[in-house]
Amino acid sequence: MGLSIGALAKQTDTKVETIRYYERIGLLPQPARTSGNYRTYGEAELNRLSFIRRARNLGFSIEQVHDLLNLSDRRDQSCAEVDALTRSHLAEVERKIADLQALQRELSSRLGQCSQGTISQCLIIEALAPAPSAV
Figure 1 (tube, one colour):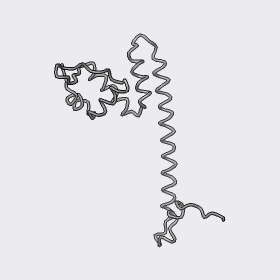
Figure 2 (cartoon, helix red, strand yellow; figure 1 turned 45 degrees about the horizontal axis):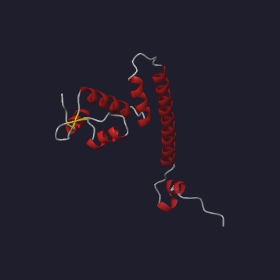
Figure 3 (cartoon, helix red, strand yellow; figure 1 turned 90 degrees about the horizontal axis):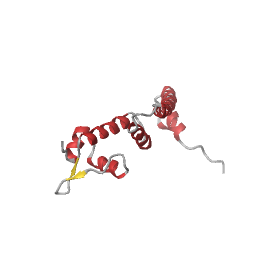
Figure 4 (tube, helix red, strand yellow; figure 1 turned 30 degrees about the horizontal axis):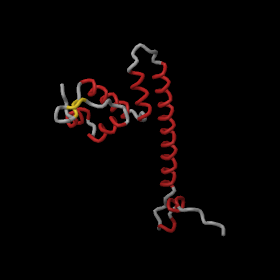
C-alpha cells in the first residue's frame, strides 16, 4: 500500500506541510523513499497519522500526543499513565470552559447595559478604554 504524501494528506484530511512537520518533530517516522526519492507511506503511517489527528482534534497538545504515542507503543503497560494524562487534559478543558463562561457572562452583562445612545455614552467602549492616568 504505497501512498504518496498527497494521498496520505487526503485520506487523513491533513495538510502536506503538517505531515512534514510531524516527521521533523518525530511524531511520524521518516518515510520510506521511492527510487525517485518521493516519500511513500504504508498502513502503519496512515494509522499513526489518524491517531495524531484524532488526538489533536480532542485538543491534546503536541507534547501530549507524543506521550500518548509512546504509551500506545507499549501495549503491555498499564493504562494508568494514559488515564492521568487524559484527566489532566480534561481539567484544562474544564478550566477553559469556565473561563469562556465567565467571558460570556461579562459580555452579556455589558450588552445588557447598552442604552443604544451615542458612542460618548457607550458603556462597552468605556469598559474597554484604559483608565485615565492620574498625572
